[in-house]
Length: 404
Image (cartoon, rainbow, N blue to C red):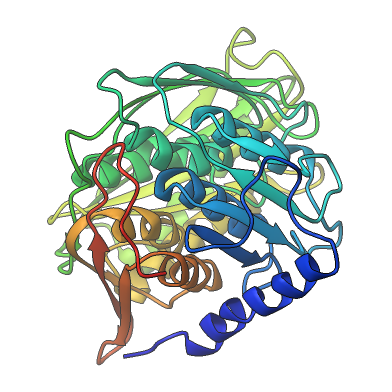
């Protein structure tokens, strides 16, 4: 099985560097725990080297009840350190678990977080930009799922609902949420307002019901037959409806060229109401393919100024076709979003995936370094990989016993 030994050795080496910093007088702010058994030392430049490391780390800090120290935040990005959307996510999770945060400011390359007790309440986050609402959810949902309370956690989130370099909110509702529900993740989402780059202004209300006890392991090993492809092609603001129509048509033509006429394809064309999309202009397409065994594969693309609608449609269709050709039961974006839930679930999860992305490798490395979750990634003859995990079985509201 393919393992990530080099990445884990790099992460483990952090304890030596942080110990040296503390010996020189560095370390956490007053009131935060110093290095010890319940401590997460994370190098933000490892593997993916971006915001995903921060989101996964802060979520693990909250649910595992471990003090977090992360440095070199987003070291592999052109603008390093915390950006407003990353800071909003960290602050959101810290509030959800009654934690204490140090170093939480825009531009900071280092953060300390000491978790408290998670509670059931309404929590708000607003980066003040078009930063992705979906990525705020990525950090917050695992924490809400394992809240010790029996009542739902409500998240009131603002920002971009359809943002570049992040899942569109439509992907979350149409692909992620139905699959995550198989693990006991009860997520209800209401997209009250749409927000696009650069103005943002999106408003999303999410309601997360904590699991009864533990997350359920997931088994997705047989993709079955392709049943149908559906989608949503949208325009907002001053953009004419024909842009969405041309996008949808180009996507369908691209899919038909490869898949033929046997698989039904239905793409909804939407002109967003001004009350739903009051700020700026936006366009894009989300596609999903449902299979006979309940798998859902996704593909998406966003419009840009000067980019022909045909290119947007073809791009989303090509992304979906790439996922279909890879032979997995999930696309690469869903795979990396499931890793945290697999690691925390009780029992063994098995998911057939295509190529394993750097985001997936990063999430696996963090789970294995900071919990007792055990992952293996085994190449499958003919292509793809089987991702297996023996999860830690974290009970709702309980800190995990760990040898790490």
